[in-house]
Image (cartoon, rainbow, N blue to C red):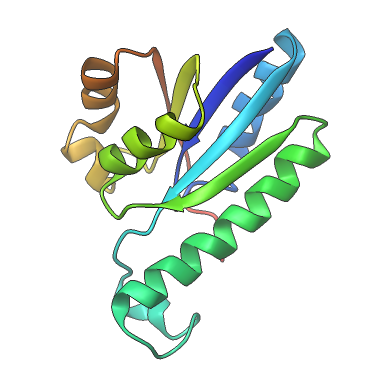
Length: 144
């Protein structure tokens, strides 16, 4: 069984990433581990998840996204687990790989110009530093 770590946040429940998961499942048995970094939240999103400190908001929103994504992947017939990770997506990936030995990493980002992860060259940095194949999926922000 192949093991795939998915790193995503705003695009987690988007159709592009779900199609990537479907393709993996169609190619053979896969197990998924989803990591949602607890990255800082823009002010307009804070009102939807509470009134505590910004770190609490980020964690709460990431947890909501993770729960929804796990349900969607499991509904496709694949085993899936996951976690809310460190606010730094590279560190979140590194720590998750200690718990889940993946064969590959799928990184889902917003499109160029909107994505902080792309400006930081995250997919290439993960591939170089963690020595795993990385597929980059460009998605749309899913509604929370």
